[in-house]
Image (cartoon, rainbow, N blue to C red; front, side, top):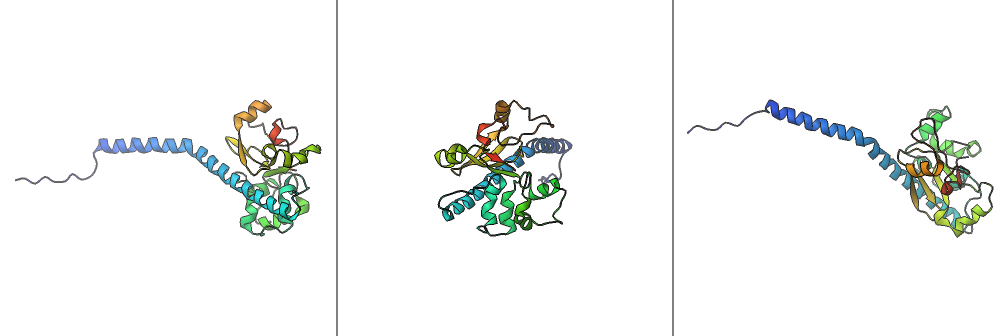
Amino acid sequence: MLKRTARLGFTLLEMMVVIVIIGILSTYLVVNAPEWFDRARMTASEKNMGRLYVHLLGYQQNHNGSLPSESGQRFFLRPWKDGMIEKTEQQAIAFFSPAHTFEECLADQGLSKDDMDVVTYLNNWEAIGPGYTSYSGFTTGGDPDQRRRLSKSPGSTAIVADAEMWHRSALIYLTADGATHRLLRNEIEEQTGLNLDDEETTFKPGPGCGVKVLETVSND
């Protein structure tokens, strides 16, 4: 009886099928990868804001229930300045969005990590100004009623937010009740009338920005 020998290798047709499948999968990954990365960065940014909220709660406990009186970035950086947070690189990085990192904030100011590490950077309280971190912090915008809203309407009062549209699909913000939110790109466009697909168009939360919930934060 003749023995049946095993076939070795692939036929040309089988190789072509494999190549086509790989091509389809590669195209799918290339098309969807930016969205996956964006979602991951948004989730990481929400975790950052959660950590900032914990710091602010700790501040409240040491100040008879009051939040920092400073505005803008100094609002959420106050616990750092007061030494309530362990001053390590890991803790410091939470003050920067994964979509706009410490290195990028440095580059915006013409600096690099060779010039300054992140702990030294955040310790320079007097240098804090627009663009110093990638987040915005609570501000009254000159309206004294805004601070009262921190306790009266915490769920609708933003206290930390992305300073700009760092993410492709949404802007992340934190309300005074500790909840994080995603304001979708199209919602911002509807409320402001802006076209965020225009490369020359920028949107920055703050008083007068056109989105009511984001008018209580500032990157100043």
